[in-house]
Length: 165
Ligand code: FES
Image 1 (cartoon, rainbow, N blue to C red):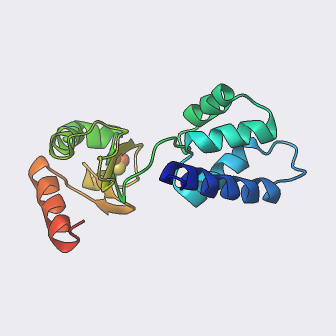
Image 2 (image 1 turned 30 degrees about the vertical axis):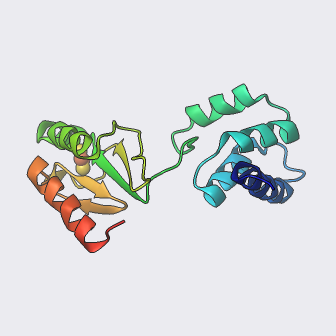
């Protein structure tokens, strides 16, 4: 009987094959292949890095370097909800860092990490263009302005009550 990791690798293999066939004949397919793989799986697992390496030529280490270089590419899974604090100047001087500290305490993760239950990822983002409402926090793509450590805690509690995971 095959174990789960073999089944997952088979699924990844068929996804990578499909993605590669979409870019057959392209001159520089690595970035679009990585982007499309991430779109399909949510991130780029190490098994996919190996398969892409075998198909396209760059070593797994080189591909890993590309993933690390591009902010939009990820080699770890993302949470169902992504919380991003604005790190722009207006938000910074009006209390953004304190909101981030509170989020780290509540979620028990650092910036760039995802909770073990995959409920939340915590990130920061450059100015979101709503400086008048600073400090801002994005919950998925929704902007929540004039944020405070107390308000973010309440917001998370409200979400947990609405959508218990
Ligand atoms: S600095 Fe945060 S919205 Fe502009």
